Amino acid sequence: MKVVCLVKQVPRADSIEFDVETKSLRREGVPLLLNPFDATAVAHAAAHEDAEVIAMTMGPPQAEAALRTCLALGADRCIHLSDRVFAVADTLGTSRTLALAIQKEGDVDLVVCGRKTTDSETWQVPPETAAFLGWPHVTSVVDTEVHDGVLRATRETEDGYETWEVPTPAVVSLAYGRDADGAADGRIDVWTARDLVDDVHENDKRFGQTGSPTRVLAVRDVTPERAGDRYTSLDTAVERIRALAAERGPEPTSWDKPERLGEQPSPKQYDCWTFVELVDGGPSRTSLELLAKGRELSGKLGGENVALVFGPDVSAELARHGADRVALVDGLGDYDPHVWASALRQVLLARRPHVVLIPATANGRELGPRVAGELELGMTGDCVGLNIDRAGRLIQTKPAYGGNIVSVIMGATTPQLATVRPRMFDPLEPRDVEPTVERIDVELPAPDRRRIGRKHAPARELDEAEVIVCLGSELPSEDIPRARQLAEQAGAAVGATRTVCARGDLPMNRAIGLFGRQVAPLLLVAVGVPGDVEEQTGFVKAGVVAAVNHAEAQMLGASDVGAIIHWEAAIPAFAGSLR
Image (cartoon, rainbow, N blue to C red; front, top):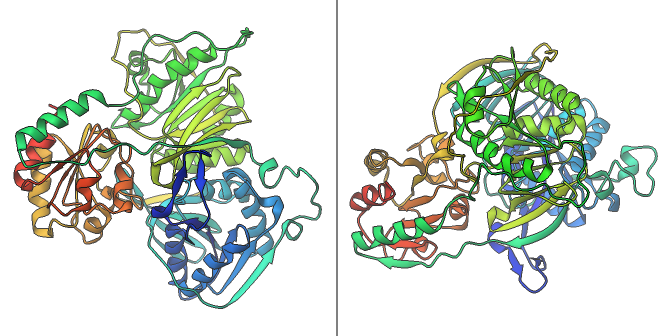
């Protein structure tokens, strides 16, 4: 079995600094390493006894160091795609180049990647690469087996774990990251653009910046200011939490649409569409957040705010939350990435919406990039802000380097696609509005995989809760059940650091941090969390951070409210403080 691992060299997360004068990142002297998620991919592939493992990267000459780490992790050989024409590629340009290289290598059975890169929070490359190859893909995978040309992959979601059987060749991305260092000697082949295609010309639209439909307009430092004030009085700490929470929160939304932008209004409508995810038969909170934001964007575009639903008719609920029109596609059944991607592709080609917003959930991060790759559309993933410029282009703000730095991005293709993180906006207050519904027919392909199992481990409330309690490794395992009980009794959702989840105290889909999930509640209560960069990254976008720990804990200084109070008293008081 031949396995290609797609890897990237990234700056170390705790070494990134923003230059206020130049409004850019300081890159000189920053240590570089193998992307931790890609390190997991190489180690995972090397664990297959019968696999020939080839690590492949696209990057400048210094990226060779990351490949030597891959050799130390068990890769048999490496391919380094290095050419000036590859420079400044976005995710689509990168995926196209990687797919060409995989095709050149030939006879590949499996492509294994990390689910994202820590420098740019990019989740798109695995599905987009699969789209260019025309292969099936599975994302956020925690385990794989390959027998007789069939991949069995278990995938992590907000609701637990599901196992799929997929024919090979296929592309998978792995859910978890790990630190890796070291280096080893071995074969590293260097390929240029001319090794991938017969002709390379100036401004070749297959590679680099000219082959990339999105571009970065600006980079900004958005590191939140946390006072690091310390409290030993429970009542005083609660009072401070309430005061800060009243000042902070998601970007407000309004039923009132703004005026259309632009000096020359066009008679043509430019609509904003939201892809609506359903949970237990109703729209998810994240979908309602995007529908609320869609009213503002559609107003600036001079068009309608459209909700797109694959499944049962929930048009009345969507109209009550801001949809001008509901586009309904029936008959798709449960989520299947192949079938749903085909349906979404047909809808986009038939209706040509101007903007399409997709929740940045396990399924949304898989579905959106797949369709973007198939249609060769620009897409920005994991957005934390959205706006419209006077030319009608979608201005997208996305996190990088853990979230303290954001990139402002604009795309050149239409429809303009974006996945958006939960709790970036507030849903609208519901109103009694009569829905307008259109039904869209699509031709459904035969499924290319089958789901053979599910394990229920719900964690979706971490995307929706106003208050989250994050339990850290300074709480011993025997205290975790009691701490969780106190938090949930007070109405909070409960997550934990990677260390706590890895030792089995909570499911891994509740891990909060750079290597887990990023959350954005109004209030994050960190209990027994040491507070290293990986952990803090998980709640950069929280409105208020309160930390409960001993006086020497790093986390106290990185919070708004640092409480030197026993956790059994602090958890119920803090978690219930916003009721």
